[in-house]
Image (cartoon, rainbow, N blue to C red; front, side):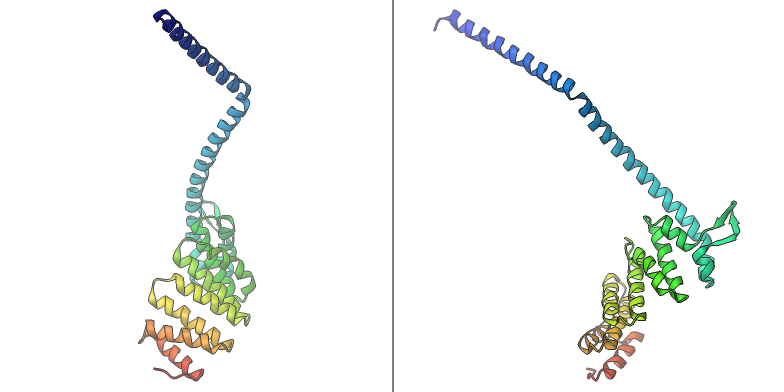
Length: 241
């Protein structure tokens, strides 16, 4: 092929590439123009999600702080066993012009925060103490969803107490076992293991009763619950090794 022919081929290729580039730019422009509403809408959604996420994070912080303040104000009623005011608040007492809110209000209003779940645990316990076990279950269940180990464990143990109170001993035992598995503190763990063994004993399931009584003794041989567990083994007619 002659040099001139080669140049013509080169020129043709360059011309073709230039045309393709223009066509691509034209196509991209046409796509954007045609779909501009969709692109704008998608961008708006992304921005909105970012804004909502930021708002929810700030709201969570604000809610936590607010719940913490309200919880501090009402705790003296709980600690003095004035459960009615602890649960429902004290309209006759105010802080900065605001009436004292009760544990039920704090737990319901701020259920998405750890402070709200702490309030729920206290509310559940207060209700249980005034013989409103059925009503307390709602709050123990809320507390059991906490990310904090102690609150979650307390909520599960509360549910176990309700089952035990209703004579549902096997259900209670299973909840006590779950509560024991959460705790990393032996003194608390053995308490719930003993309660589990006791509930299995009450349900005439001596096999599982023995299992958990022995586990208590193994974990805390000379502790209070070890003595109680040994008594349990004697009651179900098992030899203490």
